[in-house]
Length: 258
Length: 259
View: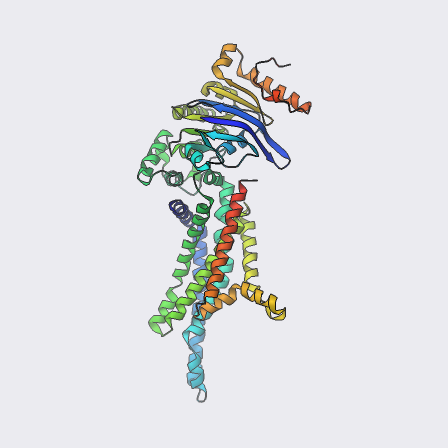
């Protein structure tokens, strides 16, 4: 469903991500792990069409994100790190607006809004201003906004950040319900979140892929995600200290870490 | 088009849920009422004086008319008020979206940048049109109780509308360049004021530069409309200012992706 090939993004001197490649199969939930500043948000912004890459390609459902940006944007629901809410609108008014700009057919707007509110448990707050909502509710409105046009792909940038434990559990549950047969990419730096929700994990460290592995094969090997994560990051940092940019940096974590 | 209208509708709604719209509207109406009252008072005062005069009064009386003594200065005053208020109206448009993060929503939706810019422009234009329309009560009063020439008034209002539209497009441009609303407002105010007084050195500089400065001046083109002359040159001037500013806004929004 999603193919990322040799993606590189430079901001002037700074290289945010370097030669990132991974793929996500249809219906899979991918956990995107990495320390802060590893390039998770940059990768997500590129594949949602927010900004172009410096090099490399992304295809979503066969459409190139740069060449066929509109087709890709129609197929993706995106929740940025902070939910993009107009704080002076009611939940319902906001979702109605998002449905319009996402190209939901006029006749279906009311239905889509209603469905999104129901799925995300927003019916009680539909007339409240989004600016007056608690953080947990804002996150839910953000999710509702991402799925209002019923996209086959969801890209969620740290959906549980800054929430209290109860809200985290609720949002995770919600994500699992939403997933269904959708393809989901979810970034986080909470490891158990990945073990709980995801089927595949990609670890990004200092802008490079440190690991791409299915969760069940990790389980078969009997290694915990924590160990893999720490190893991958340690190895990546060593590479950086050597000043190397060898292609092994992006090799899967089959070999033992030094 | 449908997308642009959705954005325009949201824009209008957001004007009216924030106090900004009411403060701007009230301020504008208060000032325009004050101008109108004083101009009219002066007009009646002159009328009384001239009709009291024995000799030469007739000539002066003929020169007194509502268009020239009330409407024309009123419209000129309003255009100055627009210089100050338009930056306040447009400062939010893009700057606020960037601050809220909703800009990311717009740019990852299947929207063309042109639709975003057009929607913002139409929304702001609708608000300003309402603002100008509310001052229409004064010309209507004059028509009811006096005999001004309606054609000249209408052309004057068309001029004011074009001035407002040009100012708005410049305001959108400055707002698209920053995420700080104050910077957006101040740079817009400076640009508008400069455009307003750009012809000051025109008569003392070389003929070529003078001609260019005359042509760039908002005031001179606006005065034509106020006099009741709808000159295609003046029309072309305003339309090209709008087109150029909106085009630059489009480029500036598009360029945000590439940073």
